[in-house]
Image (cartoon, rainbow over all chains, first blue to last red; front, side, top):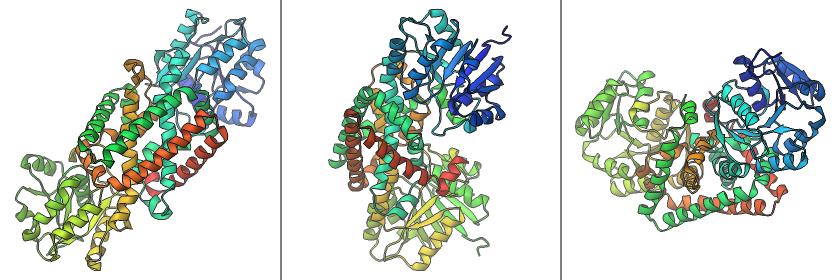
Length: 298
Length: 298
């Protein structure tokens, strides 16, 4: 019998996101146990020693047995397959969610692969993280103030959706209900496009030939916008590829905007340049009022 | 007679940069006095109360008399005119420098306006700062670890250049000698292009129509790269406009890179996309070794 709000939790993939989630659950006393599962027992044991999970195993049926909630924190290209492979191991009341940065393909693949609705899956995406990887960088406060997107479909039971929302709220998240495609459309602009531009800025720097002086001229104004360019490449290629339609739309808008700015500079059109920068400043001032912006300022 | 390394210093324009400089000089015991000059005595008095300057006046001849070094911290479009107006007020030994984000036009305008070389001017640009404005945000540690570009021309005496370098090093800066055009070419890529993209990202967000959900989807991955978009618009329009040739080159390279990324996504060319992101990741990892990057990580 569970004495805590969420009972037995399983985190599949104890990286920065999974480790931070485990740390938050333990720190806040929300669970009876947090099981970390994965492929390397050595890594899992280290995660337990670090205090981000309470139990570890590579035996998935041991972990999944009588779990109340399973959270999959794997790279986006492995999430659907992993969750579908759980089918024979889950009890009928176990809820399953994920933390993938794209939702459309993952949700569709799971629903298509589980026509009998044996898995109580509700897609999630907590809008937080870091360019760093590994539970070594886990932060029990990571989810606090972060928007946690939940993407139920018509196949999800309302009580289950409510439980998943309660879960994210319990670790400090603010819930945003979106359908999977809506999530992907918005994430393209708020997350995937900035990630792509971070890499593009690094490539543009590299086109300057004076390597030594070039690097010495780099300061916070370059390091800040390019921080995410160190993020795991294979994971990001999968994210961008799975969400290519929406990313292409956002990127196309960006290309049009840059062409306008190019024209302003080429024609010394100070009036229009001022108007664009003023509009952008208004947007950014507005965003500074968001809870996550307040948190960043500390 | 001066008892300190730099004697009497005048800061013309006591904003975030000027205020931080004054605070650093006072904190490190490098000066006899730091005079703040400007247009509003009320603001200047507040700066003195805040401890970022030791003396204030709106009477420029009082401040400039027997100054050892004058640092002009005004917006780029006012720097050259201001410095040329000092001519009758400066003693022959006073050195003058600035902190403008562009150097070509400013240095050329001053040298053209002072054919008799009555002003000992050497251009500077400390590669640090903030999107915030005002001495209220002054940080005595701002220059520590920052590259301070010095852009002497053939008209500058070597001993004077050496003194200006000593000055920036004394507040913690690392000196980089560049000619003015070289500075502008490199700054276009490391500073001005990222600033332009920060605004462009905000404008791209605004093209998404679902205003409420859009803003809730914003997280650190968007807030970080767009931070500079709140920076003073009129100052930035002047910077971009004065440096338009180099910014157009950098922006053109960026547009080509984005077109390549667009093609990769449209054709699902995972191999090339991976190659681009890997190359960018290598660049960004390399930049993480810079002193300023270590300082940012804290």
